[in-house]
Image (cartoon, helix red, strand yellow):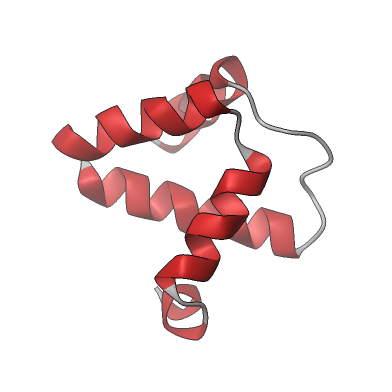
Length: 72
């Protein structure tokens, strides 16, 4: 949660918009309705990867599903 304190919600959301496709963002939105804590963890994880330069391509819905399986 330290990252969330350093980065504002707007900055986190901006990074998420850059790295996820529309479909992947929609999946996150639906998931947030039932598991908001997982979505927050996932956003922080993705932003950390982005900041570390480990995200080389846009994450689509299928890739997001793979990531969700790994962290849940």
